[in-house]
Image 1 (spheres, rainbow, N blue to C red):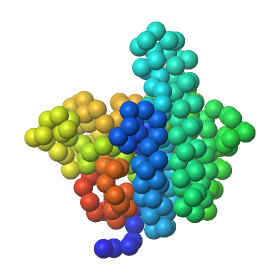
Image 2: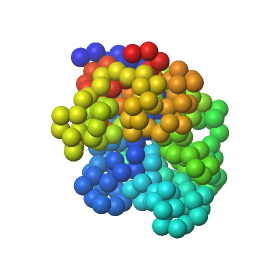
Image 3: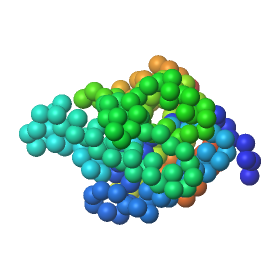
Image 4: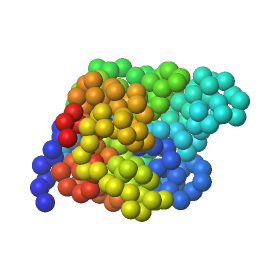
Length: 241
């Protein structure tokens, strides 16, 4: 197995739901630790890593809006949930000896840094993992869009989406076992086939910046490290098939 990573600087997007493990709400400590362990392994390869974590395990703005809440207010609550997850991931990483910084798009200086692009890049150059919290800082935008935006701003080589399955399928393989699995796709195919892996705004940002997207199973031990070496099972989304 080659120890030379294919990428120098990457951004990993993890959904809040991925942190629940088998729980129905909140954080599963074992799952958090397992993901942190995989991130640590990638850092050990010499890869510069940034992260964006969703907040759906705690609060989803769109779900709050569906119950009658003001959508913008509900989205701000969801942004606060992402900061809670970012702090939890920071704690898990630092217990493994990985220097980590949390930067929030909504300033809360008592617990984390404000988002400053050049400072974030400097942290990554020094080998620190940077976790971006509070999405884009604006309601009506998902954390997927925030991940694509931050990956473009940081000059990342690739945007990785850690999901519950090992790539992009034509339908949910957990409910449709014979669903077709794609190894490669174009941005336009993702949009035209309405493959619900990332929202359209996130895919558009990636497409405009020629930022490849890799979708893999975040729960497979060592999967993040394997993808960095071009190994394992994943789907790659680029300009050309």
